[in-house]
Length: 274
Image (tube, rainbow, N blue to C red; front, side, top):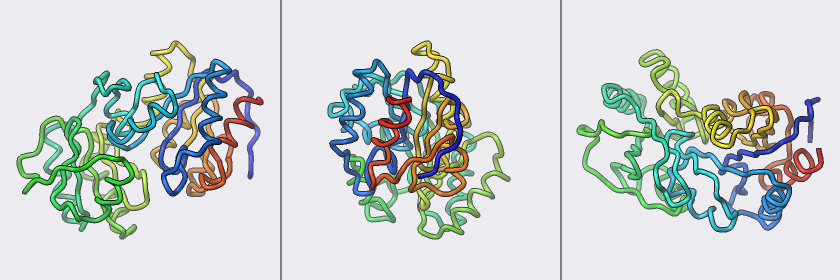
């Protein structure tokens, strides 16, 4: 484990990514992670989660973690309460939806579209569909075409195991729509396209205002490129040891991997015992 020199603010809120961070690689919420969140609560430190997952894919964590804070899904594109009541939603501009879909298709990526609380796919057996459904405990809806899809789109996902194709699609997307969307990766095989203000940095700002906690008193923890935006907005940022090297460099501190209790280790050593 490598750490960097950091200031020592009083942390009043921890915001955690889910996959690759809070959960192990087998999507398990360990007993040690549960105890760590309990200890945060006992120390009067709030705990919240944010993810590229849809809200339905986060609800299975509400009861075991005793969550009361909002669920920030789609990297903050859709924020709900723990009963999935919508608090805030940011959708992709309607004129951009079809050009984005066409661009991803032209680069050979499969596509998923999230509309409100729906997950729309063209093929129930497409790349990573069954894996994603099992991970988030939520089934997609198959439709014949995306041609008429434009309204209320919270996220479009390009899916491919070809990392070069994903990278090329992201570069082309930047050239096509620039700052009109946010395009980040929550996994190496996903390209998540959302509203430009649907990023985890904005989640930090939203929760800061909601709970009247200055951002310097907020800690964040994550493992992928879509977590870097919240690293930049928080007083203490913690990168998982399983994350890419550039993501680790973007954080204040690096913890162990998600299969080596990295989340719990970070809570125990970098937040509770500061």
